Image 1 (cartoon, helix red, strand yellow):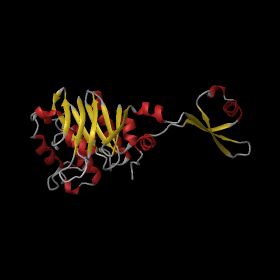
Image 2: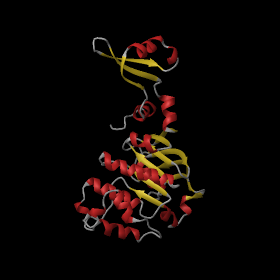
Image 3: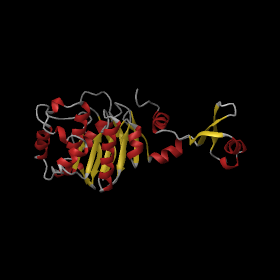
Image 4: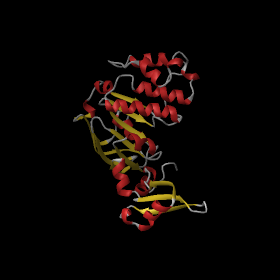
Amino acid sequence: MFQVTDLSFRYPKGKDDTIKGISFQFSEGEVFGFLGPSGAGKSTTQKILIRILQDYTGEISYRGKDIRSYGRELFDEIGVGFEVPVHFSKLTALENLDFYSRLYQRNTDVEALMKRVGLWGDRNKRVGEYSKGMKVRLNFVRAMLNDPKMLFLDEPTNGLDPENARIIKDIIRVFQQAGGTVFLTTHLMHDADELCDRVAFIADGQIREIDSPQSLKLRYGRHSVEVEYREDNGIVQKVSFDMAGLGENDDFLTILRSKELVTIHSGETSLDDIFIKVAGVRLHG
């Protein structure tokens, strides 16, 4: 879908490159996560891919064709959800969507989508009266407005409660199942782990790792099993066993046979932990 080769970018007043020679690609029907802390270059890269920023070096192709060679037909195929919602606050939600819908050759079923995100009942309310979470959900509807083939989403669940975040993630998954492609920038590793087929870790304008979440966990994660069990005196003990040779570990088998188990689970490393190990920085400062 997109092929990016040796991409670099420096803002006009910047002393150093914000993007430093990165290369990656993602395929049609893939949810590709672009993950990193604030200031790492996530949003800048997205803005380059959607042609808001154009003074870059390197090569970018969309469907095998240089992105610079496309006209407005490119924007009829892509939907964009910016990190900061862009709305006309004195217009109602429907008036906002009607305005933006006129920019495209085709549109989606706005009523169905607004009902899905829980905004249909507030469709005639001015956006200036919306809460932050409502604006985020309306921002997502706007990204889907032109029935896109390709979605660029920048922190799509940031600021949402768990219930509304789940609705957005479910819509993203349905969009992918229908053949859609998603470029997802986020610092929320749980979202990436749940949604993405592959992820790229970016820090200080450089890509440090690209792989599937599962492969990253296998490569960098802990391979252990943690067991909590209750002693005869009622005290709960916790012990960890290496996963290698677990079936022949006498101490582990003794606990299984003779103790009251409280919990047992694999010691899987999170993407947050792996990012810190790979990039050497924390996601949340």
